[in-house]
Length: 164
Image (cartoon, rainbow, N blue to C red; front, side, top):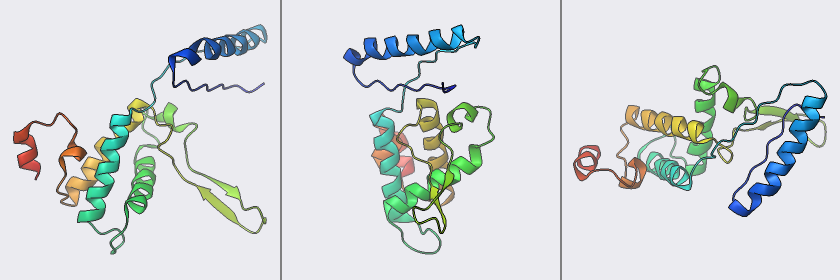
């Protein structure tokens, strides 16, 4: 039996089945003498996702990466790796990184190793919030002119005017 169970639920109708499965595993673990913690956590919101993808576009438009213009995917990969390196030992994010850290896996042909990068797909709300702050910090250091969508939908006009 694994010592960890992660069940993701995206629709309310999926909750009863997920809760039943979690209860079964928790019961088996406690009967085996283990203590169990059941944690319910929100995954990042679509709004957070849209915001940082807008930031990637602004960075790709305004900045060089490694001395060259790069596309948004390159910026996303570079920022995710840099965010991981900057926060891997931060107690605020330790639980989040436990199952999301980059890792090396063997290539299918056995001749080398392949890096499995950090993915934002399963970021918690907390990790996504930290990532957005990190991306804004990197952009500020590089003089990015943030678009309104990179600052958030409810940005007051006077704040947007300062950032533009």
